[in-house]
Length: 257
Image 1 (tube, one colour):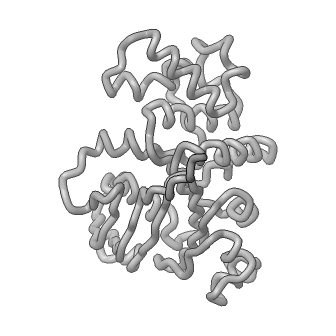
Image 2: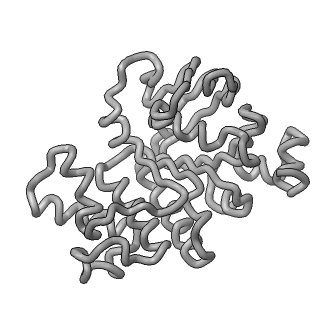
């Protein structure tokens, strides 16, 4: 009988501070995200949630005037210490945005875009990646007969699942999701949530969400951000049923934010 292995630490963030020019956006943020778990980041608008998630694959570096101190350890390597290979980092740390943003190409070409950049040219390999990743996001049966059709013809929920498949095609370790269902109807939202619960068997998932019910339904751990700080971070059940900080309780009960 096999003993379940301890979950691997994917991100260990220590005393992270971030400034946009003179604005101190993140203050002494520390948290740990493990493999095979969903980590939800909650908090009111402007509290630093989206800024934080963009530090985990250094997309934040594309914004002007950004300065960071502290540590963002990804698999024990501090992303702020050395000249990180950004192409490789973003292959391993995939990102899904608020609105599905497929390329104006075919469904097939959307999926193979990343693998081709990373040197996979053989058609049989690319075909297999397309089928596997579309099955992973429960989209294969819906689109297998129109892979050469434009991705722009898909519904909003299908486009979002396609974008998740596109991120998975490069075989990442981590999937970052910034409000991935906020533009979707309830049925599409439920499909994405079911998908996340399946995906965590293979990946570490970090999700920013305004939806308290979503965070409580799908995440293993939750961090509550306020004014650029982590007020509280714990098992999701504890955050929602027995928070230690009154500000957390006030937020999740709808008294502010």
